[in-house]
Length: 128
Image (cartoon, rainbow, N blue to C red):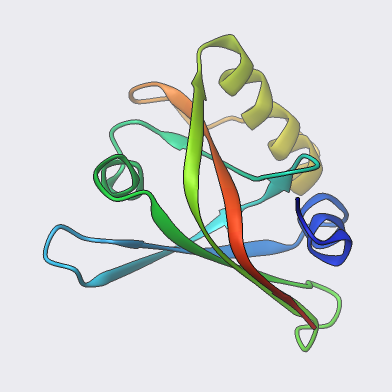
């Protein structure tokens, strides 16, 4: 179950997340992403051809840091792992929802492969 402060940061406002995955050689790779959550998981949306997704498919461990856009001294860190992925129309609709939240428009970038929602279950949570 997600801490309420973390769920709030992920769902309210245009707060960005720094998502860190592990490359095949073990080095970290960090990418800024739009963020969302349900009651139990952080929700990341990416494409299946991207390095972060390939990393998570190989090693499901991930760290997500969410920074409050209004006050960067308020943030949350979640360490956890991918427990589920969702593709198809649900993932495509989700990127439009995120784009509406962050830009006010549907997602306008060309989709190169396939959208995927990555569900991250927390094993360690910290909110400040």
